[in-house]
Length: 160
Image 1 (tube, helix red, strand yellow):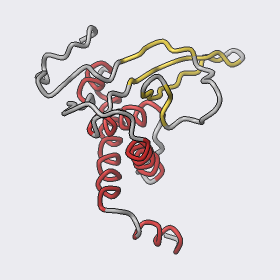
Image 2: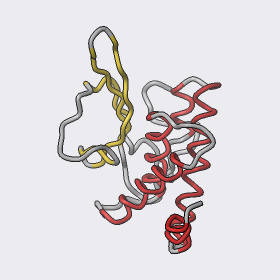
Image 3: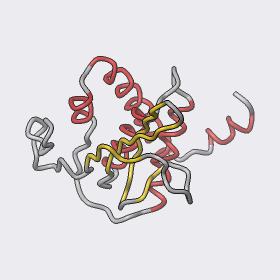
């Protein structure tokens, strides 16, 4: 580890270390789970129980985005957009934000490309800012599917 990286790591607040560890574990679970389970089941498993609603708090959202990106960079294998989006949505949900998961496609030449991302209040989170997404949304999964009063097995997800 380089000295500037070590200094930065040592200067992190305990909450950031906790978020980083949570993100790393959720990314690992999402990556493995997407290999072995149907998407709908994995998505339900990683839909966090929201303990309350928060209005937009840019600082907390930015820390969740940072933790997910850092955990993705320092993982055992390269994380694709779907586990990253599931992990970021889980972290945001645990922090009290109802973030939506979107999956979209675009055509590039003779290829069909897909991408997954998270939106909060209709705006992409953790994506390049300032330019519209070139992906056409195919699937939107609202982030407010489960609350503390909803049991794990009785999700209001229409697909499951």
